Length: 210
Image 1 (tube, rainbow, N blue to C red):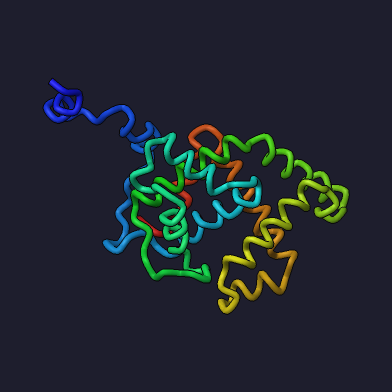
Image 2: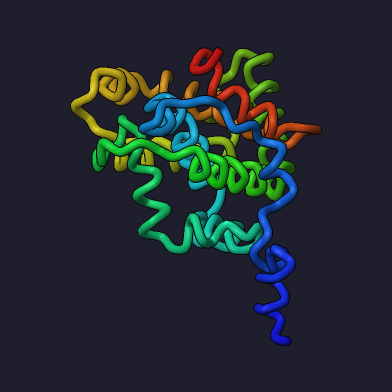
């Protein structure tokens, strides 16, 4: 009997197709039949944008992470990854689609996994930011922090719709954009802790479901 036939008869999913253990620990919230809200899609996309600013070749690393965690059937390539991120209403290329729950789960797992790989760097940047604020010095005095903030700003300006009121505010105020970039670092660090992925997942739906 072939391996594939045995799997059919026993209803077992091959090991290389099984979802990561974390998948079952992210609750299936009762969302709209259309999918996740625009706010949830926006939050996930911004977290991924911060990860892009933290490391080079970030999209390739995200796809590799999807494959590692058996999520390639949901996010098989760069085009699909881009389309899912374009469910963020702030995007220039917003597609007016809704992110489905399993797609949101996959992106959250990827964001959490990448954050854990970058924990040391994220902690370094947040520590530098804290120390500079305590000394009442500009946070851009730290070279590595400035590098991250500059990359985040460039990605944000390049990807987001400059005609949206909130985006206009961020572009007009570099300080606000830097604060957004820092706040996303804190959320990414939050996701690296014990049960961090579950807590991050819950925060994405805060106020969305009862």
